[in-house]
Length: 156
Length: 156
DNA sequence: GCATATTAAATTGCACACAATTTAATTGTA
DNA sequence: TACAATTAAATTGTGTGCAATTTAATATGC
Image (cartoon, rainbow over the protein chains, first blue to last red):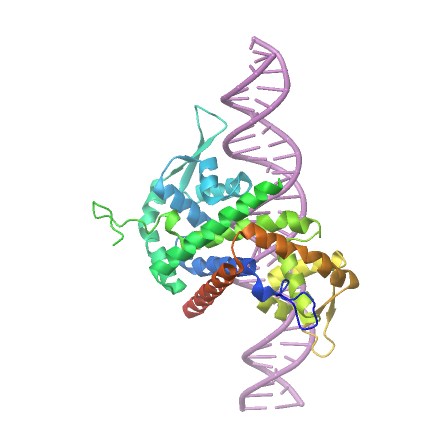
């Protein structure tokens, strides 16, 4: 298999065969699809994800948010500062363990949740797949993600 | 559906239910998984994608590369300049239509293809799924991507 | 034939991602 | 109790992505 008529290795370096490109390219499309819907809220897609995490539970550390989103402080620190500047969250050092920074919602940040409800509805329609299809795809991707993460850890 | 025992709307804004987060998060993991494998070639993941496109066909315009990868000149121009600086490609204006810039491989760029063959093999293993699974997932994602793209065009 | 519209790249500005390092606080350990 | 090791954020630097604008060349309509 994977050989052309003349015996050369084929298709391994063909873009159309790349699962990873499908993932990469779809992820970019996701961000672009969210952009006009999130513009009304003044949020970028990663900022929206942070807000979603905080709407589930307030007063989380940067580390806890980072673990849920698989993002490090290099990404989160400036992003959180922007959310703070926008008046949606507060950042304060944990008095018990001063290494940690606790992130909490402001009233504005909490209130935004209602307006944000419309976003996943609109995106769900844009995906154009049924709920069972979406659930199946999601779990397959999460499995794939876990496999990739452990393969990265194996190298280290 | 989607209601908690007390009747509140539930689960719509829960991260674990987000197909889009699964895509976003897996895409980040893909980039991280490629990074150590591409380091030997001195390429980033997007740069690798451009090289893959060029290994399939030389002398493509920036626009043609952009259409295949769904990237615009804002992303490609600086990326291509880095590949040029690295001695892997050449950039020259099309003499027939001077609006266009033609990208071609240098000998070094062409030679890299051989060494790059090992990358998709390693990544394939890291994914930890069978070839039929990968193909099915890829086509589902591409379908989703097309749906998203047309939904974006609908808004405009 | 010429003004207008369209097109292809490049540029500008902003916001991620992430590796690597730094800073400061806490933990563990002899 | 010292002091090395670990941990949590922040910082620094590089490379995307992409919207919006600009520049230059080509196509189109009258």
